[in-house]
Image (tube, one colour):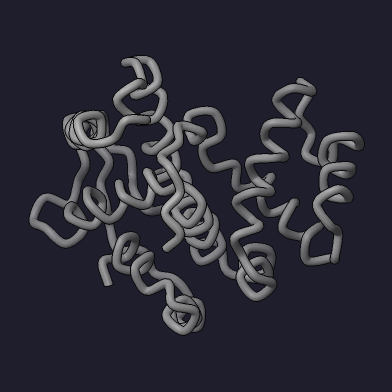
Length: 199
């Protein structure tokens, strides 16, 4: 995995599945980055009123989807809903090192352990450890951590990787199309299956 520096970008743009699906279709249709930006920002194909927010979401979602090849983009657009949402979560983990580490270190443990849920404490503990061990995270204040926790929780629920139960997130193994699972192994991304499906 390409280890990028930790980032707090997820706090502003968590999952955005319907928008990602629209943009994936544009990319599959052969539009380049400038053309996708033209469609989504200038023509407001993604239907967001605020220009600043539209620009930000277009750039973030495009960055995530750029981590996917045409096969995976086509699975977002044409695959079953569970597999499609899983691939978007995988794209987030692939482009956000901190989120990947959370999935591998915390989510996977809940999935494979006896508890099968994540409490607010699990998120707090994860970020507290990262604060101690990473200079970038060490600079983040409580508000940023709180927004990240909310963003991570939303991604888990919106993707189908978790179910909200009061203040906890119940985790259950997700069922995705076997061909996609095999494909991720073939391209050398088994660690993402381990992190997200407990494989």
